[in-house]
Amino acid sequence: MSYQVFARKYRPKTFEDVLGQDHVVRTLRNAITQNRLAHAYLFVGPRGTGKTSTSRIFAKALNCTGGPRVDFDPDEDVCVEIAEGRSLDVTEIDGASNNSVDDIRALREGVNYAPARGQFRIYYIDEVHMLTTNAFNALLKTLEEPPAHVKFIFATTEAHKILPTILSRCQRFDLRKIPAPMIAKHLLHIADLERVELEPLAAHAIAAGADGGMRDAQSMLDQLVAFCGSRIAEQDVLDVFGFTSHQSIGGLCGAILSGRSAEALDRVCQEAEQGRDLTRLLTDLIFHLRNLMVHQVDPEIAMRDMPPETAAMLSEQAAQISREKLLLLIDQFAEVESTMKWALNKRLYLEVGIIRATQLLGESTLSDVILALRGSLEGAAGLPVGGGGAVGARGPVEVPVRKVETAEAPVKMGSMADAVRAAVGAGRGVPVVPASVPVAAVEKKEPVIEPVKEVERPEVAVRVPDAALWEQIRGEFSRRMPMQGAFAAEAVFLRAEGRTVVIGFPESQATASQSLMRPAAKASLERVAMEVSGQDLVFRAEVRADLVPVPLPEATAGQVRVEVPVAVPEVKVEVAVATPEAVMAEFMDDPLIREALKVFEATVVGGK
View (cartoon, one colour):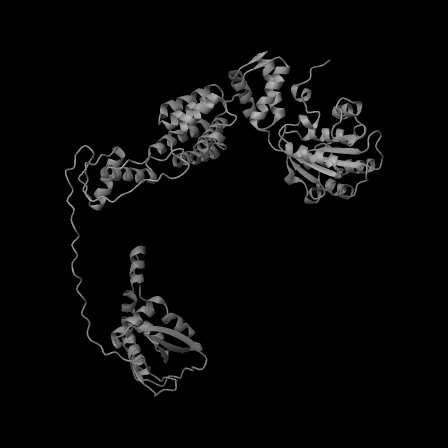
């Protein structure tokens, strides 16, 4: 008999043999038991996770003797024929090579025939996403309303390429990647059956390299048996497939955390000379940093299903770095990983990333500064100094604080506290005392408070706001600020509501109302009103349809005559027309204009 590879020899035969897909197995078993069988199923998942094996097991359960039933015998003739792909009632189609409309038409003609032996005609299409759009459309009607004796089972790794009209007609099952500990355990079981001595660390290395695919792991084990014989060690796995051991990744991470750049670069050099994939090396390093972060949050989760040697190293390194800097390291290496994917010289980018990481750990973050200051103050007050970073803590550390009356005790600070206190003191005028110099006493001085001199204002008689007062305010405002005064000239006094003066504008002067009520112009108007009336007035503008502007009469040179169109005694106000020089002077006096000229280093050029 010819040799049969492990991936075929140890293919699952029953529902109990399927590993890592309990949610799929349970649903299929319940559907068979309750007789709730759909006419089309879609299995989606990465390679090697059991899509074809699960489909064949489901077909066995449907067409077995006395079926459909869950507890079928995998060794009976019908089930053996299905497993070997020679059953007349189960047709397996490769969607990559049979993806035309003619192939689907042949399938549509075959569904009309009754099954030869079992209860159903089952069509299994692998990589169904490879069918053309026309082929999918030709399958739609048959897929939606097939004969009662027909079942469709589809499998794909790329469900997003399948038409939504096909997806809506199927029950979808997503198969997940199989956990590495489960793969390693199954590999040890196969090695025991094959009488091969497989080290547990070697099994874990194979499982990690398989990336969730059981078929890939079995193929790798088959290759290792051919390479090593009856005994397989972890180093054999690393040499054959170019993987990096957990100890090597941990040693590289330890060198980075300790700031030993030379040792870290030497480890990278050794891995490169041994032909390791540097991109995979960086990916494993990032995953190791992720394990450190998870260990700081919950050590039990991080060390679950992990070899004892790796778990001890993980616990030791997690205590060497704060969570904040660990996140910075992960971000740093993630950026390097995205760059390495398109780089020709991957080693260069990896080495530069390692050097930057060691420099990053030597920099002081804001948390370090705060902790150093808190430690120096607690040391000066005789309080216990708080922890530095709360590595691995589940929450913030509560530090008792009491009021310090004097500072007669000597201040004991570390190097970080000295540097921080010196920097803060130099910038704020605080006396700087290093840790090596004892402090006898710090004299406590009370701040000297000088009385504030009141600004003398000229006495102004307080007046009730009315039309006459508004005209006086407007005249003074126009004299000081001719540009804004032109907007105020369009307004008339309407009423006074306490200290609020309501002025009105005709509808044709709505723009003037908006301009006068801008914050800067309004503030200037209220400041002038304060000086004229002796009280703090607030102005509000209303635009009304009953206010009609009166045409301006002819004016003498340099004067304009304005008549107020309201039911009050007519008041005639003479307003001086602003000269161009006055307008330019007011424009240049604006603080915003001066700041803009300063920022842009510009000058104002007059025009006609």
